[in-house]
Length: 457
Ligand code: FRU
Image 1 (tube, rainbow, N blue to C red):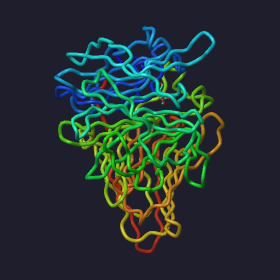
Image 2 (tube, rainbow, N blue to C red):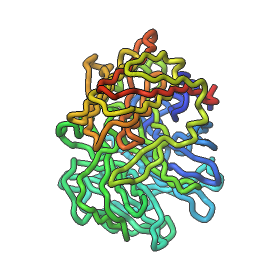
Image 3 (cartoon, protein in one colour):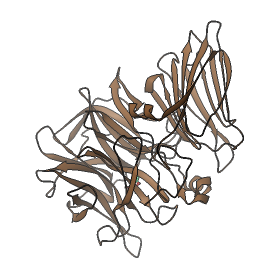
Image 4 (cartoon, rainbow, N blue to C red):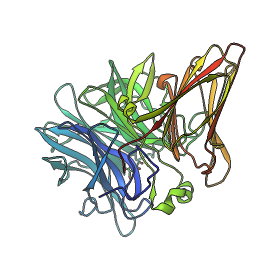
């Protein structure tokens, strides 16, 4: 199956056609990276979810395959929802949620498994857990991992009967028979009505619990998207997450970022892909790519680490392989022409600054002012035509900005990945200029840009 869809997206994982949402089953299996994703091949709505499948040897070039899972069985007939994968005895196991709706619209969930000997064709095993008491049918997105005690653990996004979000754990010795352990949090905050896509990352002695709670109210610069993804820090042991009490921190301060998943590759790196999802549905319906028969894509693969009490995200170093012509400029104010659709821009700030501003294609505006240390990103909402802003207060000075951009998509990494903003944007074709300006007696900008080119046809 070739990529019939958008030719302007150079290096992201995107749907061959139809709609893509969450990354699923991420793994490096037998030396090949497998990226599965929630996929509706029949349309640009959320109708029927399959598991789409792409593989890569270098995290830069992807080959697209037939769907790995199709919603055709009694236990998944309304969707093969999100989940994860794990290698065991040389085989690749997928875990996912079978979504079933009755004629009356009543939902039932089944946590299901499938297995493969070659990573290409999958045999469904069917449901492997029992629905526990105390929880509604909003239970999904199994993430399976091996614990230090040799047992397998499954964590699941859940909603309690009192309509609060939660994450529960199951344990297994063989991946087939699962024992219910209960909530992973003994102390739990009320954080929305449903927690989707839980993930647990072990980073330099710190465990990070990443999840996507639904139903948070905006608080200043926090929680301004309809749904958000963030994390708690603590320690995960025996199916329990001992939270250290640090507040829930959003992972990406931009507009389009949700339901990420991580895996550890052969080099020991923790790599994350997220869904650059556009929500709510009015914005999905108005998304210009719908006219081309596709919608949404994944983020770049990002290496995750934990330094100085902060989660750091940096694009995988393999992306350097995309770099073509280089341009370098120094100054206090400058204009750059965008040489092509896909583009990497590295900005270093020299000296103490008062303000910094960047206007990209007359559409996206980045700004920073040093009194409040607030960094903001502004773009036009393509459904309402209104300007909208996301912002964050940096811990220290603004030192560097790295931007990866394609024709309609942008990922902005600040101070080496201390803060990240992901967004889609829609600019006029003829606007192909970037302008930058810095203020402060001693301040200057050093900008290095690259045209990016992937092997994609
Ligand atoms: C998150 C999510 C998951 C679910 C999937 C269905 O975006 O709602 O909870 O498994 O999408 O496509």
